[in-house]
Length: 322
Image (tube, rainbow, N blue to C red; front, side):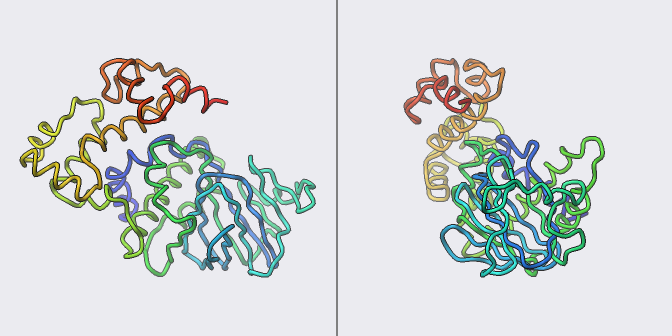
């Protein structure tokens, strides 16, 4: 429980960059399998987590090196490229997962028998020695892309290197069909993603983005928190400097060195990423979104949006809805 609470507290530091549309009705599945088995994943999902509960499996990316998963290991796979999950590198896929989680054989025939193993459970055996959990984010926000684009196409955090109760908790909750269960599973998936990313970024090879490392700095970290949590405020370098207790020049120099860009440039990109997501909400207006992200008018937001992104807010909204 303590580890879960720590993850919740930690969410404050990255919530903005994962909060876009978070997991909402994410696809979650428990797979129970007996070797030989192999699944070709072609669902084009932007992000998938695979957690091993028991047994082992191979993740074989479209390009790059395959990785073996053991109990407690978690893999993050960035889409939309296809990949394969199998008991052995030499096993030929018997199952193909298409967009919308449609399941067929390699010949294209539907495999309805693969869904008859219980609530959110499928496989080729009801008591197979292999059990894995799959959580698929079906959409990717502009906000989360700022974080996820820093990740490799496949990363694995070994269960031997971290101690988290989230995998067994998710395994027990995934088979329940109680009221509100989807919301519980969505939040557990978010927590698992954040916990895995936190662990990954502590590794020497994790290549954490500049803003992530800068959160540990007492000055720049405070500035980032204010920008992330209050983008609607009329921030200037001077007002940020006053809040952090340093001079404007010192803040600008320190912020740029740690984050990789000046404070106001970072703020503009952050506001426009938020705006891009908010514009996709059904009832959102350009004027309302402009106020939420710190622009004085719809005209000001439209000008900044088109200058940075090459399209107007309305054109962006139309494109995302087609």
